[in-house]
Image 1 (cartoon, rainbow, N blue to C red):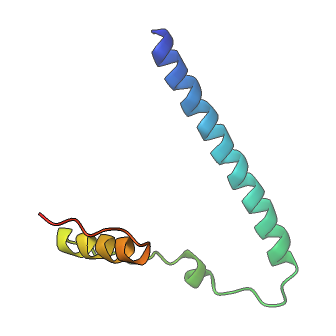
Image 2 (cartoon, rainbow, N blue to C red):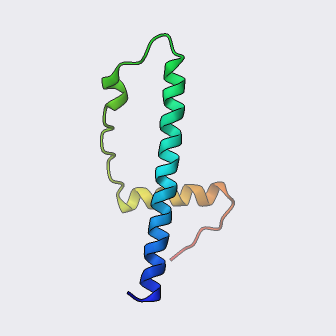
Length: 79
């Protein structure tokens, strides 16, 4: 294993540990919050999966970029 590979491994490990720690904090928070509620929301509603979002076309993305550029006072680039 090269030093670069070792550093990548260490970074991935640390990122995973931070993510796991945040997940545990979130679970503890939700457990405490739900313990105080009078009525729990329906479990199916909580666990429902979001529908996949429609992929944007290149034209849609370009349109949004142009709108943002105009909103922030950017200059229009002409070809």
